[in-house]
Length: 181
Image (cartoon, rainbow, N blue to C red; front, side):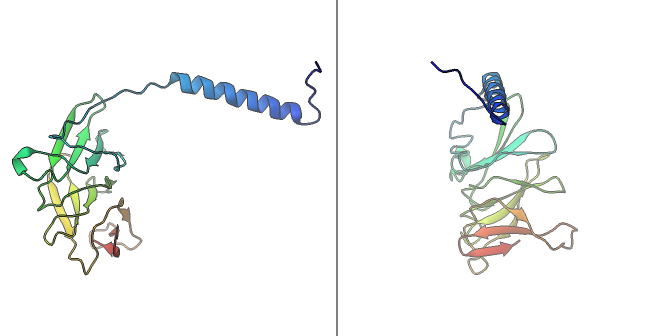
């Protein structure tokens, strides 16, 4: 059996690769996945599509595309916050403030969390809404009429221009184009 011979920079590459593999093994073994909450449909279901957003208060905010309170008889989805300790507070949408919030939240500079619903609202074409993390109040920011866009299903992003409030307008990618709200 011939000995491994590394010529030129070969030993440097071998050493770097060995260090990388060792570091990966250390990091991989140090990670533990902990379930903070299991949804029961009453507090939401299918949080699959939403990217979690950390609020200024340190809690995690996201949405579930279906589920919610039986009292609103809609199962239109929820907005929820979960503390690092696993305590969940769920806010059910009722259809008038939108339904099926697939995209999650954008944290505004004003501390509000902004999201979209792909259906529901005044004309059934979806809405842009905000969630006040302090009060749990959901406020409709824009209801799509169809002629100005419909069914926003992706995460909001900030536009370029400044608005009257000093914040850039929200841009909602919709199935029929883009709309500033």
